[in-house]
Length: 465
Image (cartoon, rainbow, N blue to C red; front, side, top):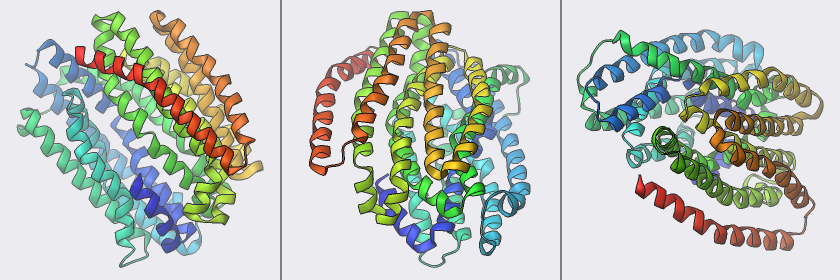
């Protein structure tokens, strides 16, 4: 994130706003196209973790290689699809200037070539997660995140072409896969001895991964449809104004994503054998996440105009500050939703998550199209925020329905939503910088003091496990 803060202003200046806007879509594509793993990465984590918990590793070799062959085949299919749609996407869907058509098509085709590696990475990382080797994952993920920004910066030293910037991203993804695989092979020797597909393992992978696939496809569509519509309805410059604050705010989500990634197997284990611990984990995780993220996001909301002005200039700040504020509020609702989606997956109900996303999809697309068409990037950000609110409400209700033990707790989580809107509405009316600084200091101090007890309890639960 720190590298991104320095790299983004440089890239905007060096590449120009339209070329940079296209680069942000390529960044998004690198992450979104992992949907082609069909949920097998998460399914593999669950199946391997269950076997390790039961000390039943006799068929682990077959489970791992069945998943790897399936995701490899899906990666090749995804590569062919993206390669074929690159031309029509650049020339007819996105509002890309004619001068950038050749670069855009070449860049998307390069992106297609790294898809098999990107998708296979999800399965290999799933093995590491099942073995609780999060430090080793981080040792690779940190330089991968740094090079996501630094790679394009380095490419600008010898060429302003978007194609070279994309080539660096492809090289980094291939290197990351190689590193993950070598690390996982040191922990799971099965990776050193290839085996074919074992048919009896296909059905469990498909049954868990099938519904996850629906969410993996539909969820990111709702997450990223706004920037595609901005590119189609407005301009690539508008995409740059919109995605620059979005990228920063999405990087901040490394905090909740890290905790929820570790809690997924913990929830699954506790749900099966210790319901009291399961309820305690849900309570404490929710408290810790709220106590960390609310003051952080409130501070970003308060200082959005000033921070953007310092970072990328006054013109950029004027256009992007309202977007930043709506997205900031939206991300807090996404946090509530993701906590409950993790519970639904861990308790074996990914179908409810998928059905909720299917119900939300078309109304959201209609709203974001209408808001973008009539109100520009501010309208798109507002629609994205509303989508976060609906996700938080629906998934909280589904958690209470699916897991009666958590019904009262999930309902209490719903009460936070009107409080968030009321509190952020008050923050929006504060314009004096000294008042903003004072309020931010109070927020951070109060929440840091409150954070101590839940963190200690969460660490105690982790140590006990």
